[in-house]
Image (cartoon, rainbow, N blue to C red; front, side, top):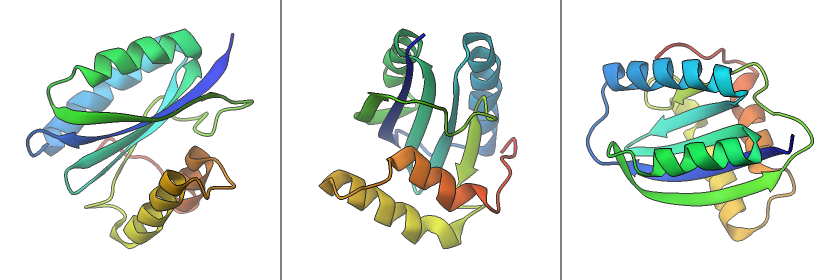
Length: 142
């Protein structure tokens, strides 16, 4: 098995409700558990960022399906590389809604994203996200 990490960013096509997120998480957790996929979905102000970890062909296939989902648009594949270990190993799919859970972390996330886009990141983006959000956060259903 070739463990890889995939990170993409997109924008919602309509305002997503708590029920939308509950539905996404229910399907993702069931599918991901059966396929050996872990990761986390970040949401704020109409945009999404998702980290997926698993076997290369499995997460590539999942990303192709996700990119066609009509709930979002402008999918931007930011990172798809081999990794030695999982960052989100205990989360079949975690979700962090920055609008309701972590408003104070938005500036840290934006800074991490800006550093990633300019190539100034010494620590991989997924690890940086994990460090920003997991020390005081346990993923909830929504």
